[in-house]
Image 1: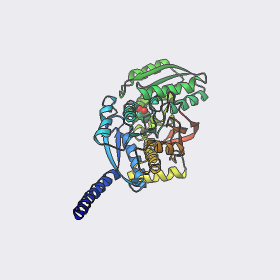
Image 2: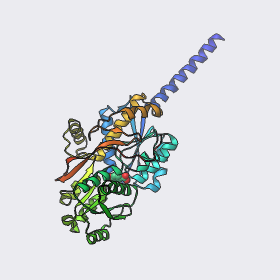
Image 3: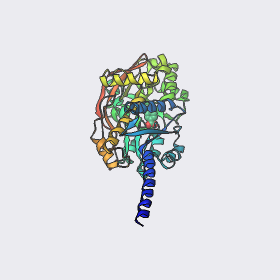
Image 4: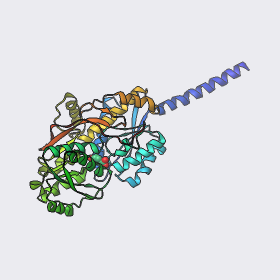
Length: 389
Ligand code: PHB
């Protein structure tokens, strides 16, 4: 009896050991779900974010908090109507430990809702939607980029200092465009400026001609705009071709000229924009980042690459504190909230609503670079209105 029992438990033990080894191996891998655009007007932005994030992981020897990193990727097409299905593929089908995405604000809002409901970690490496670090904020949702309001606000202050009084805005009609314009107005109108007309067209349309004709007729002191990716390339070229560049200064959130200069060529020359990154920071941190990015991808990094890299850094900080446990949201959030993130853009901290508090630079296009002229807004924090956690 005794022998039989010993035999049985030895067999049971062997089985248990084999199963738990397999389980550990499985659990051991950290599954990162990338939800990014691979097609459409923001496709190149998605690639840069992916590159930046992978560069951080490679620097860690392919592991975060001792767990080998495995990637799953979904093309969200920057289409809000497909966003809930897409994010649920990552959460429910692929069972990812963390979601990294996305570029488009409308898609990001659907992702934040799903992340909040499921408790899955979400790190947003671009989309600036106010809601995700406002009313939808949550302990498991972090942003490594900006809020749409931040660069807009900084440019509003710059426009005031330049003495402009009457400005027209033009953008895509969706959260990012609306919020960039809101930021601009907040910065510009407090100094006595007046936004005389807000022009827009649906995302991702690029038929700008009728709106450019309207701008010419309105004769404002200047124009403020938010466009990005392929749309920004076309807008800058069309603005110049319409003859407006000579007579009406064009200002923008820096996405207008980031990752786009190769395609915009001379039409972008001298444009002034505001953003949390630029091409000539000349800090040791940024130089080493740029060198290793260029070596790895044979490309110069842009703001999206930095945001992807910093999404990786945030994940690393949080998971190192929880010993790799992506379900320990309290421990993860505590560590990230206490951290100074050593970004190539310059160090930043996260606000209470988990949005970067950061310097916004004034940049000027010189050749193929966004050259920093100075800091437009120091340690600028998004108001984070409506965030309770
Ligand atoms: C956004 O939708 O929030 C968005 C998209 C592209 C950018 C910036 C913001 O470059």
